[in-house]
Amino acid sequence: MAVKPIQIHLADTRHLRLTRAGQTLHTIEDGTAVGLTHWLYAFSDNAVRPSSEITHPVSCTGTLFVLPLVGRAQVQLRTEQADVEAGQLYFVPVLAGDVVSVSNLFRNEWINYLLWEVPAVGHEQAGARCADIELRPNELHRLDCDANLGSVHIGQFAGRAEYTLDFAEASDVFIFTIEGAFEVQNRLLHARDGLSLPCARCLEFEALSNNAIILVLSRGGLHQDRENG
Image 1 (spheres, rainbow, N blue to C red):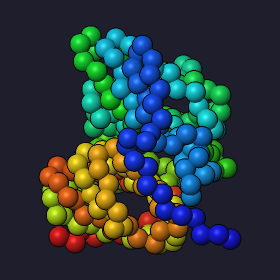
Image 2 (image 1 turned 135 degrees about the horizontal axis):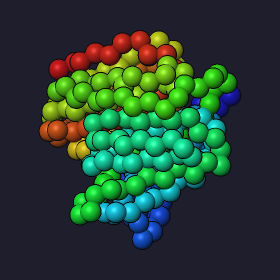
Image 3 (image 1 turned 90 degrees about the vertical axis):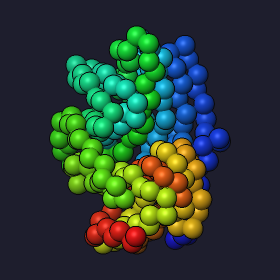
Image 4 (image 1 turned 180 degrees about the horizontal axis):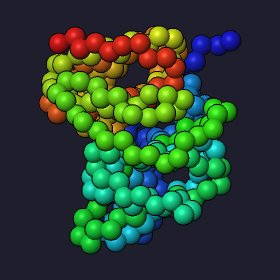
């Protein structure tokens, strides 16, 4: 079997979809990321105008995640509705063909959120949940999700801070730089750049700016994390 390649997803090469309600920048569409096909079906960076709504057609049966970065997002799926603040992660079971709407209830301010889809893995899925995010300096915070959905980490780092995440087994990993710049596996990532890293045994990165924020998604066994300095 051929080794899956590492792929960088540059922010300025993302597919842009503009509507009257706002914009969606697609890093991954329909599982097309090399090395992550059948694991991460969609990943997008979204901005919604005041008093507006964006809709997202669901690509696959599985779980949809919404991570507000600025403001509060109201997420609607069939009869399920949730208000999700910046500092929280919302995830909900979805079916292929569902349409999820995300509304901005503010009258004068835009909102910004990340959205991604993970396919089902053949088990009964739990209901919708919301996990709180607690950022501590120079640490990755593991969010409280169903282990079958993989791992979700987020962290804020000062310049020159290094970190290592070890995996108990080879894991497919997707990294997204929310703010600032990082060197990840010897590759430079600026704000809103992504990196797909297949079959990783460990993840090493260094923050290159202050208040840099990184998101790490993985499918596989997590062993331990280490702060290197």
